[in-house]
Image (cartoon, rainbow over all chains, first blue to last red; front, top):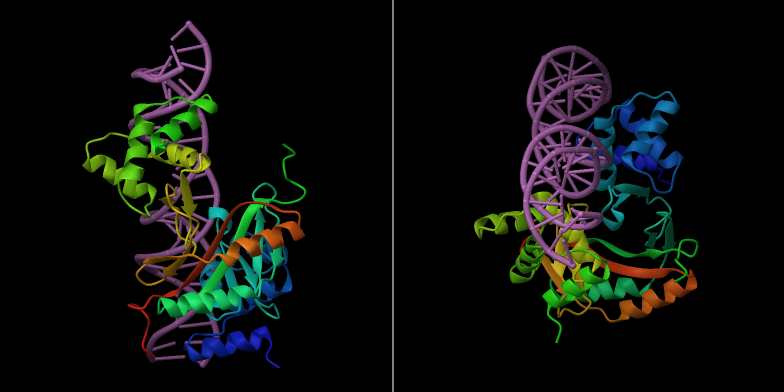
Length: 144
Length: 144
DNA sequence: ATCGTTGCAAAATGTTTGCACAGGG
DNA sequence: CCCTGTGCAAACATTTTGCAACGAT
């Protein structure tokens, strides 16, 4: 069975990139904690657990993790980038509360079919899709 | 029949905001030209047509136009905000080429049903949805 | 030994804001 | 006349980059 670490090492090897302590530390942070996080979260996690990685390296490593397929990058409602790891998750979509920023995940199997149909119609080669619904969650909906 | 200008004036009146030459100029620029544009595009359009509006006013007015429902704001693939006007358009989705940034519009009627179902399941009140597929368009797909 | 990697601080990018003055209702 | 809107420049938030030293292969 392939762990995230093994997958990442393999990815780096194939691209002739190096396995460094910083990259492994960031990988551990990413898979050890949150569901949805941003670069700043990771930096604080690193500091509070005594690991020293710079902000630049975090951004550079996040790009690699996205490229390797281990991470997905989201931007909800025009905000800054947030990430979630894909390990063990199946394809899912998001609702985003514009008040409390809560994220609700859901699945909608029909989307695969829709994506395939439209991609083949336009000879488009899809890499990624996102279906997001933004609005008020049940706790934040105004009563008017 | 309600023109964009009439709709915008009505919106401003209801919110007790003022109809200013700058706001009307931006509205004209928005509806006079592009399908998808960003704040910088508008600024250049304004300059080349001899109208003088500041960047700050453009951003402030774009917010109002989005709030009034005349404009939709998109962020494709984590990039900066781009807008498109809604006037006369029906609901549509986008494919986004990560190489040339071309946008291909398409419609998928099933999405309305999916959105309704999931929203009611989670007691979520949707304001906006976006279904985006990013990848390679037919002109940019690598041949490997 | 080579060449990719790191940290730092500076730069770049996109957007928002404080303030004094202008001008619409 | 009041109070919102404007322009400007500075502030802001996030992300990227140049460079010298470092270190994995």
